[in-house]
Length: 406
Image (cartoon, rainbow, N blue to C red; front, side, top):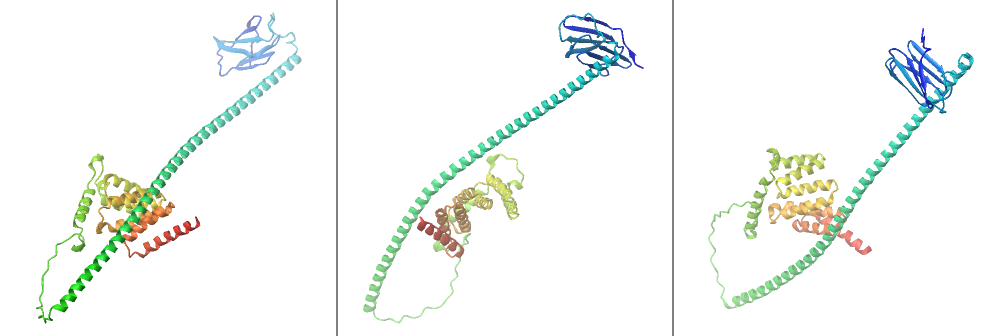
């Protein structure tokens, strides 16, 4: 059974009511408070207190605190004036008070509903704000990425334009040099023919005069014999009459120097990471597996350590070609050709391969004139290669066809 509290202490001002309700051991977590503009109920098992107020209060501005075994309720009046009594004049009328209690419950339910709706609306507003903020952040990020992409595209476009301009200049210079070289060679051939003609005529004249003057002599036959000839051992199978000994020795020295580990890097590397043969084998394995990016990484590491080995640039250029990075392929092939100097028989296959690969990359970049120059250079090095000849002719036909259309 509840203990109904009837006697309490209260005091008032024009604006407030202060009720001191005795509830021994009351705790805020277990205190049940129900209030409206004309009704107040406070319960803490087993204590129960309710009052039907004399006039209206502002429930939203009222407050309740617990201290020293009392529940202190501070109620704010809606209309500032003295009441001089706490309870409603009809508080003994049970039917009337029942109506007041039900109105209080309805008001409380309505306020809770309004609070719930307000909280839901605030939650939805916060969610919308959060979504808008996230959308704004994503838009800013997209704009930032677009700006980076645009800058990269502009940079690549500028590099391509500069590269094309340089290639045009180099092509014009190469064509002019080619024309001059052909003119010089043609003139040399004409001079040689004229010289041979003069020598032939002089020899013929001398022979005729000798035949006319000298009597016929039957010379005895020479005795047969065997002569032993010792040849000097050579690294290159070049005939002595076409000797390139100095160039070949220089090439061997350069090859030996290029395989020396670059000690200036100051890197903590294992023996395999400093072994050029191991690095080439590893990169070739990646290439054969179709893992071209890993092969590029291994070749790039090897080039840092051995920056003067031409085959590393040539092979990395092949990897760049496979991933459609034609500009890098052209750069690596050009660097390989620079290192394949002096031109000797030992590096001839590498030079042919570098010219063909760079020429193909130029054609992929639609720089067909530059590609044709490389193919002609490869054909000059290997005149019997029918495939290079056919490819060069196809490029030449394409250029002539486009020139006719233009």
